[in-house]
Each structure stands twice: as structure tokens, then as C-alpha cells.
Length: 72
Ligand SMILES: [Zn+2]
Image 1: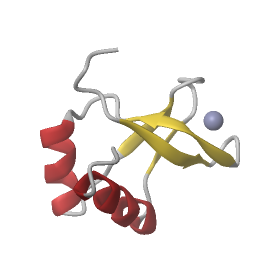
Image 2: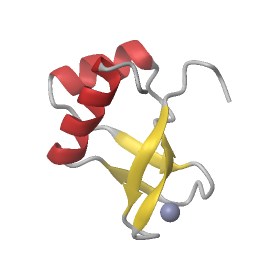
Image 3: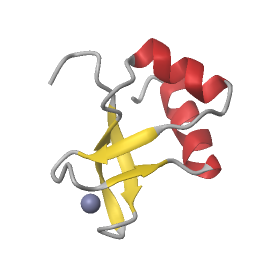
Image 4: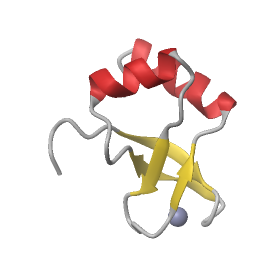
């Protein structure tokens, strides 16, 4: 996994639980930019690449906060 890939806990809608998710396309700078304009953040379940979804507003707000606090 390239070091630019961001991983964090996210609710996988297929597994219906918190899992390790990654943003496969976005590095940190791009992810920060997409979050700032409330754009589409695609997430892939790290353990099962067939599970893909987009973050909702609440999850994006949470991720924004975690990144601001240096947790992600
Ligand atoms: Zn899943």
C-alpha cells in the first residue's frame, strides 16, 4: 500500500459494522481538499475490495475532525 493512502475506521454498509477503510484514489492533500468542499469521498473496505461506498455528511465531518486532530 503506498504511504499516501489514508486508512481510517468507517462504517461498511455491506458488513454493517466499523471496518478499516481506505480511500484508494486520494492522498492526504486531495482528501483534505475534497472534504473541504464536501465532495464525494469513495471508500473501500481494506479487507474486502468488493465493498465500496461513499461517505455520508456525518462521516465526512467525523473524518475531517479526525484528520484535524492528527488521528488519521
Ligand atoms: Zn465490508
